[in-house]
Image (cartoon, rainbow, N blue to C red; front, side, top):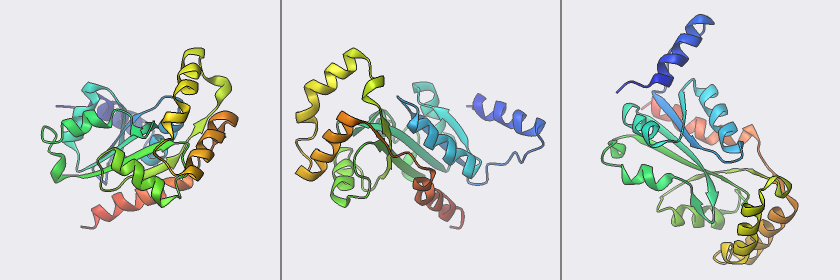
Length: 196
């Protein structure tokens, strides 16, 4: 199976006189709702010179072609969106033989160890990279706003009270924690596999 995104990107880089190699044999697959997840995905892809595709069922199969697979989804009620589809295809894509890096983007405190472990546990993961996202309550559609309001208390019930309070505040007032520095550990992970 050929990745049309890979071919198109190669042609663009050739035309610009850029390096066409993917030295880390990696792909970044992302599922983004408000563009902060996509922003992180692009930063990682640019830093590592990797292929980059938005999540879709057909793009997900590209994971089978790479040694390093980076999946980034936004976090909704503790779940990393669309991750289950990747995990259900673990054997189809031979993911056990690959370095699979899972990242979640959300409004929770990414430096709180308990919160990070809660997200890992909720998604059946041994480890996860959490990246601070962005949320603007003024830009949420009426239907989504009503859904968030209805779910707000139950959404945070399994977190510690201080984490739940912080997240309620961020939902009410808005939050923007997006910063390129948070990709550094992910970049280090991929670069370390190149030395193995």
